[in-house]
Length: 302
Image (cartoon, rainbow, N blue to C red; front, side, top):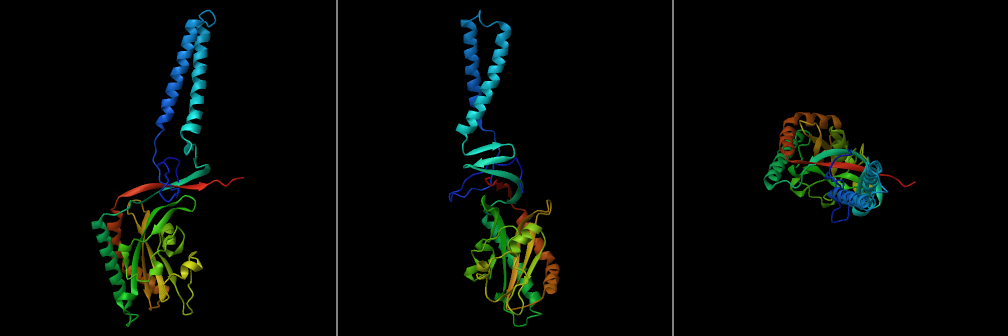
């Protein structure tokens, strides 16, 4: 999603080009135009004094107007090509290190990092939700352990301009019972995995493993990523955390379970029954400061 107005792209320490932007007219352009115009006007005035018989008044006026227009155009081109070689905006695209990118839209995301107090508030609400899920599931799986019910929260951060402008990450403080280290590094893009699909659609997403160990929907998760999941994982529920004013998804909370297989209908019922816990978590998360980013698509060379 993108707009032609926004903040100006920057490059981070990992040399990844992001879509974070800041709008301002290059002051160097204005300064150069002023200097060149003044110099050009001075030269014409000098010529007027030196050659009064050659340049009459009407010709002088026309000449100075034409000269100013030419000088202004030349100054603009010189500034664009010399003073702003790395980030040059023109119409609906920008040039980044020699590559052309079209602006596609803008989106609000949560401003990271959270304060420690808010981190703790979010963590407490995630744990309340997880405990409520355990109380619901114990009816169907009497031998279920509390440690088998897990939860985490994913939030968006600026991604790589060449792959995805948004990457969904899972801060350690917001993982509950996530002890399988293979899952810690999992990151998702919009429309990628249950998490990325919930983020994009703004609707709860479910994935259930059958008795043969096959997922009913992997949501574009690769085999390599599937191999990182806990081997006893039975199902996943991803619920978007949406801003109540804009209806925009700002985060995704995941609930999953080990060793307790239930069907989609039960997961849907559970999600509806626990709506108050999701609402409480939403109030804490969405009350945090936000930032605006833009997304860009690279133009393929022809």
